[in-house]
Amino acid sequence: MEIFDQLANGFNGTNSSILMSLVAMAVSAVLSLVITKIYQITFTGERYSQAFVHTIIIMSVVVSVVMNVVSGNAGVAFGLFAVFSLIRFRSAVTDAKDIAYIFFGLCVGMTSGLFQFDLAVILTIFASLLFYLLYKFEYGKGKDTQILKVTVPENLNHENLLDDIFTEYTISHDLRQVETTNLGTMILYTYSIRSKNATKDKELLDRIREKNANLKVSLTYL
Image 1 (tube, rainbow, N blue to C red):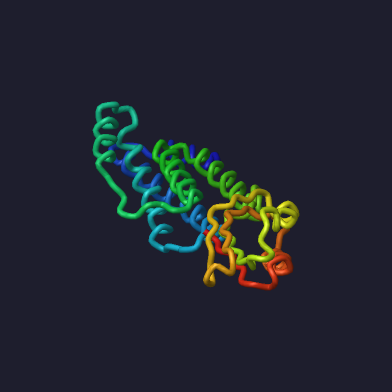
Image 2 (cartoon, rainbow, N blue to C red; image 1 turned 120 degrees about the vertical axis):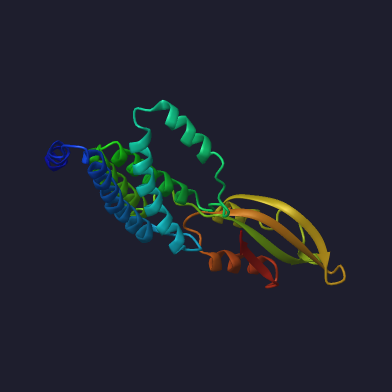
């Protein structure tokens, strides 16, 4: 990282702070491009937003300038924080990982704005590698809660009809609702379940259909 030190020492005169700010913005922009590329590779949500990608880059660059302004000036820092506290986002962030990427971009902008370019590069490389490895190896993977609806003929209805299937295929299950249907000749059970990672949805439904005389079974993801 000696190139950054040489660059900082090479700026002399009245324009040195402006030149250093330009370097900080350029570094934060380049590093935020790396961050957003990792975000695009590891994206697993339902709604991809190009605007969110642009936001990470813009916020990183803007924060690098803000940190340059407030460094060493507590009064300005408190004033800026008071202004930022008035900002409200129109759209809520639905994916928790998106919040991590926003914070990631902000931290890179902050370190660049403090002219800690070597630290900003190390942070970008290390955190990007960490995000990618977590995505690649699917660390912490688990299935979402699902809503299972099972129709059972009245003559086959008994309290523990599906207990053995739930024990084999699910981590947890809770009975949420019981109601009669088809003029009272059938019972509709509604469960909330969390399947095991190895569970295949079709296999689970087929096993239940063996128990409920092949009547309607539905599985809904929340």
